[in-house]
Structure formats: C-alpha cells, structure tokens
Image 1 (cartoon, helix red, strand yellow):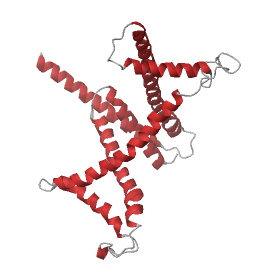
Image 2 (cartoon, one colour):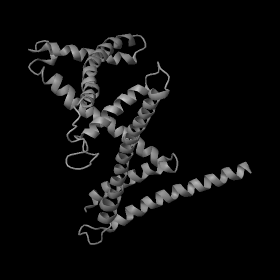
Image 3 (tube, helix red, strand yellow):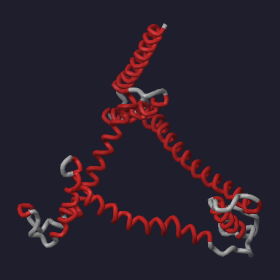
Image 4 (cartoon, helix red, strand yellow):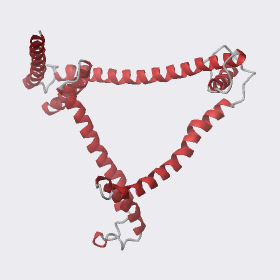
Length: 269
C-alpha cells in the first residue's frame, strides 16, 4: 500500500470511528464526520444534477443557438420555459417577491402528483390486489409433492395470503364492534399486521447490521491487516506515525473530558 493510499484509508477509518463515537455522546469527532457527510453529499448531488439534469436536458438542447440572444435563435427555444420556471424558484429568498416561486412550485407539485399517483396505484395497490386474487391451487394445496409452507405457489400459501388480507382489512372496519366471529377475524388481522411489521422491521435491522459489518471489515481488512502489514513492499514507518497521531488525538480528547468532568463535579460539591 502506497503512503497516499494509506492516508485515504486511514482517513476513512478515522471517519468511521468518529461516526461510531456518537454511541458515547455527541462530540467534536462525530460533528466533524456529520458535517463532512452533509457537505460532500450536497456537493456531489449538485454536480450530479448539473451533469445529468441541466447540461443534457437544457444546454445541449439549446446548443444550436447563441447565449448572446438568450438562446432565442435556437431551433428549440421552448426549453427556455422550464429554465425560467427554475429561475423563478430563487425568488423564494426574497421577502418582496417570494410569491413568484409559488407558481413553479405549484406546477411542479401538480405534475409530480399526477405522475406519482398512477405509479403508486399500479405498484403498491393494483399488484397487491392481483396477488390476493390469484386462483388457489387446490391440486397442490400443501406444496408440490410435499408439505412446504414456503412454496408461494401452493394452495395453502395462497389461501393464507387471501385470508390475511381480508382479516387485516376487517380490523380497520370500525363501523361494527369487534365481537364474536367478526372480532376473531379482526384479531387474526392484528396478528397478520404484527407479522408484517415485524418482518419489515427485521429486514431494516438486518440491512443496518450489514452496513455495520461492512465497516468493521473495512477497519480490519483494508486498514489494520493491509496498512500495518510489515511484509508489504510499500510499508513505511510513517504508517505507524500517522496511526499514533490519531491515537494521541483521541487520548487527548478523553483526558480533556475527564478534566472537564472533575471540574464540574468539584464545583457542584
């Protein structure tokens, strides 16, 4: 590992540990990592929006015109309309003319809503209804050749999906008291909802655990085993110097915290 690569790898390890330090409490190391992520993300997305948004969708489509005439001599000058709407958004920062930004905002929200509602209905509602209304395979009720609840094509799984959807919908029907058979179906609907919420929460937790494992592997494989491997042909004593500087920085902060704690405690007593 070259020294420049080692510096970037060490910086990545430092930022990782600084983020984990929030588990102790809010501290300057965490604030540095937090501000760095926000700043880098904002700059990154500005560049992405410029190169993937403005440049191909506006400037490249007006490139046959001249900016001296505000591209009015372009063969496609109508692309200036969305650009003007975008400029009108900036009036939001003016106290006297902030009302101008309501027009492009209203247009944007209206178009986005018109696009989003059909997509959401098709992906989140219609497809779920189609899955609920699939024909129950009574010939393979317990599975294809053997009992298998995980076989989504088995009749039993399809029946459970249908019963679970109906029961969950019954639970949200409040015009009738949840008593008797109706109450039993609503109770089963509660179980179905809790299973769904639990599976969703478990999936989210496992995704976060996967991210945590990835960062631990980074610290172990990319930093400790690689950077501090004396058999590495590019190994340098400067690797250890940078490492101990970081250790001294952290140790200095811990000492500062202990001194502040004892001073505060002595004042209270």
